[in-house]
Image 1 (cartoon, rainbow, N blue to C red):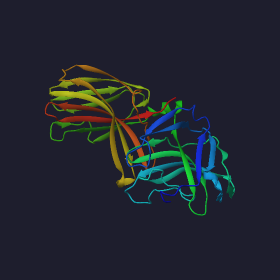
Image 2 (cartoon, rainbow, N blue to C red):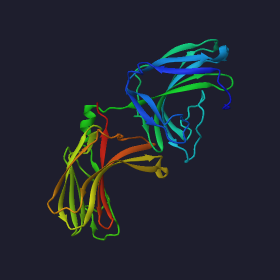
Image 3 (cartoon, rainbow, N blue to C red):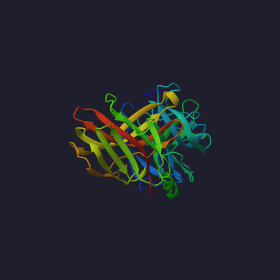
Image 4 (cartoon, rainbow, N blue to C red):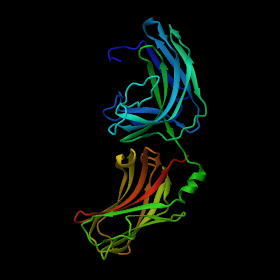
Length: 352
């Protein structure tokens, strides 16, 4: 549709109780078609009803013929373009594409539609209520570097030429049940160790770079070992935390002959988008906390209390097309600028 063409109909979508709901401010990336830097969306939960009113206003007293008016509710996973597939664009009555022109829809895990009005003619403004009762929502909303999980209500006026449509986005938060939370700490913990490969003295506690350590509600222990130079034990209470939790742990120096400049603990969020070898990894540091400046002595213990509630964190999530994981990382930097670090996957979840 030409940018100079002005639609004869204005469509407004209002959700019931929208003003009284919690809202989330979501940043719009540069290059998108958004008119503002951020967008405010009402927050819904799994199983909640999504209802409201769609109002269609006729411009300049015109009479608009149509082949019907329908409402749809859509849940979609969109990946950034570049790996092939159809392009995004204006949505039509027969195809739901990404609402972000930079991305393409790879899966619609939710798509419900029904008619609001049969074919006819609009001569003045009309309002139509809609109701999607006890709506199941499989995935939590997410807006990342290369993937979006989005929900929206779409109202479409069907015409012989180009359809006229309007969408209303909303955000979905998923909360774990108490039973699901109890089962989280019974899962094994993935531990990954990496260090500066130029030092031949580096030793690993296991033959493989990655190992699984059983965690039956026991503290998780990480060891960083450099033969005859350094032996550190990093222990924290559990492997799963709510977004409002506190990570409590300690760092114990069993051997310290390395000249350490400083040490830090960081929480890294890793987004993996795409399938198999075509997947794209993006790491972002959600929290960086310096715990020591200077060299420690043997036997020294440093307590750790990392409060999560003050940061905008993303819970672990995933499906066939993407996953988001969180890692707790201990980083040591010596006076020569060499870095030694060890990462352990932790599970972050949303709890009421």
